[in-house]
Image: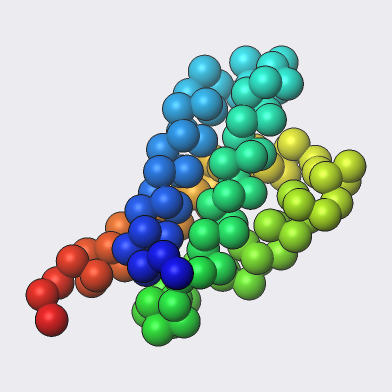
Length: 114
C-alpha cells in the first residue's frame, strides 16, 4: 500500500504533466490527438490517485468536489467513447488550478512533524 504522500505527489505530477501538454494552447491541443490522449490519460490517473487520498484530508478541502473527480474517472475509464474534449478542456483550465492548491496544502500537512 502506497503512502498518502505518494498519492498526493502523484496528483501534483499529473497536474504538472497536463499543464505541460496543454501549454501550447487550446487550438494546438484540439488539433493534436496525441496531446489530447496524453491529457486524458494523465487526468484519468490523477482521478484514480485522488480516490486514494484519505477522507480527513478531503474534508479539509470542501472547495474541491471530490465526488465529481471520482465520477470523471469513471467516465474516462469506462465511457471513453463518450468523452467530450470540450469538457476535458474545461476541467483542465477551470478545475485543476484549485485542485493543485488543495493537494499542495494536503502535502504541507503531511510534511508537518508529528
